[in-house]
Image (tube, rainbow, N blue to C red; front, side, top):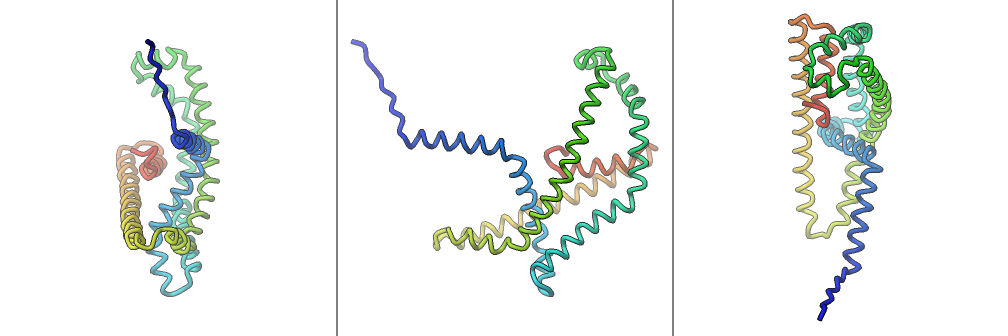
Length: 238
């Protein structure tokens, strides 16, 4: 006789699958927001020792604002000292972009040219133009996101300890010492990671800038800044 096999899926399993699907859907919808929060949290953890040192002489909020102003001053000072060179080199790249593109296209292997559209250089220029426009829009969005991330970083620095204590209050009392120890170790590791990333980015900027200058490559400072930024951001860095 035929045997029937019944597959019984518990409601708990179905709910877990639905919850996992909802989490994945939320991740794709909120991935940019989550990344901004994570980056702000990483920077806040990195700057927390500096804020704690200044906190000995002033309130927490004042120490946070002072560190934030120092960070803005460092970045703004670098841009102020190098803006003339960066703008002139960016203008040079823009004015000679077509010639640079044609020279690079001549050096591309034939099979790569065929894969990208053969000898139709106009089609390639159109693609590059669309990519450049998309990059400009992304750069504008990045500026807005950076401002929001900076504000979040200040919030985490000011209210981080209170938020941390509030979260630990939900942990059973017997596990709170281990949770505290874990958070301390995480803070130490995050500080070392970000500090190391900053050092390697500065090193990459200096090496690229010096080597490009010695080789008489146009827009050496611009290339060095791009190298440093790309090295600092692990997603697009090298």
